[in-house]
Image (spheres, rainbow, N blue to C red):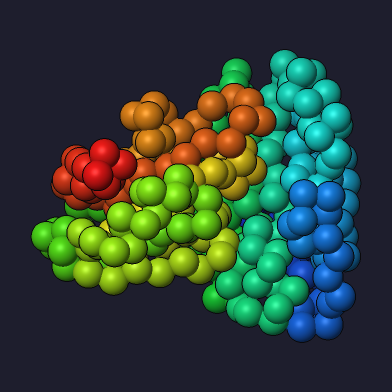
Length: 270
């Protein structure tokens, strides 16, 4: 086991412990609150972020930490002072699901070095599934390799699509809903898990209009290392070392990507 793999295992232990102590005891026993932007936050978001922040800063004090539950001012300050590396943490991705008692949520953690994602982990405490990746070394689900080459390719009209219609341009959402080029569509409510289930081939194509750094940092690495492909609606790389939200066109296999991107582009022009 090389040093990066050892670090990945250490981080997986931290995520599993945080979920067991801070998330699961509160699941179905929480009152929701609302942020100024209207999104939901719970005590569990804060408790999980605080626990992981303490653990990460105790063991790696030189690495800055960006958490979703920080204020925008704090987040920008962290981004501006991350020369020694940056943890990007979403302590509870899928808070609306969590608050409603819907069993689909996760913890997402990425490590950026020199403004590039080097490690990513996403833990689903309901299914006890930990998806992880190391840049250039591969992706795994509970230690077993994720490999797109094992997928049987289907025509697009037989594919399952994950689409978040809420955040897409209205014209694109309307076109995709009324003239779907795919077979069936789902939206599960946890952007981090969307990336993982795409990487695992549980769905074949993905479309999202607006994800933040903590939504996609770990997930896009996991998808890429599993053999999938993604870009923004503008054709740029999804990862961008900033707090500016990014759109996503994704596919579980490079064999799906071009035809899916063409279908999305046609829908944008319709």
